[in-house]
Image (cartoon, rainbow, N blue to C red; front, side):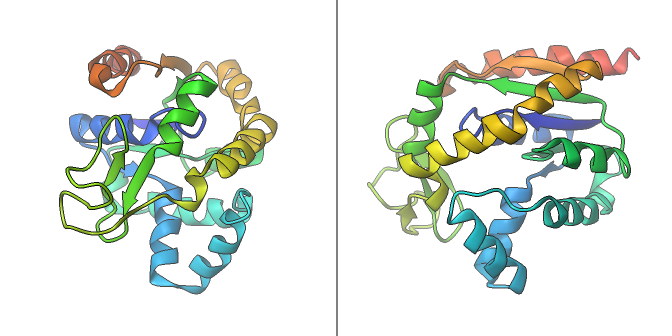
Length: 216
């Protein structure tokens, strides 16, 4: 099954998608992570993307579409995928339809207060990429990764200023996709406000919606 994970930054898409990926044995594909890998490698694409995101802007459609299309061609996507963070615009959605089908769109929703708290408190390991939260999922030693001992840092897109900028971009360009997929009959709203301790409640909602695909 080919699934889009939709919703604003900070709604928990990444966390829930990783769980669903293991449960349904289909890959979690995040253009954001693909780009971060390129930035880490200091490739030409990575340098170009880094300049864009450092200003709180979205990566241009042409670049994102090309990267996603190439990723979906890989063998691990033959039985389906969980696409997290794409599409973010109507043009991207229309482009996606040209090279794959979509079975369901899970739209994770959360209040602005919850989103700000989750994102501004996140810390990421510079070495292995492990993610923590200063209050909800803290590391044993402040600023140090439990897994590898690497330094934890606040990503450029998780500062309060960047969060506000991205929220404005989301409301302007990405939110219209809710109506787009609703008209297509593919959208399913998922309440992502519950705290991480209640993750089973969120996954249960997802399972219910995904089970409907099998009945088609």
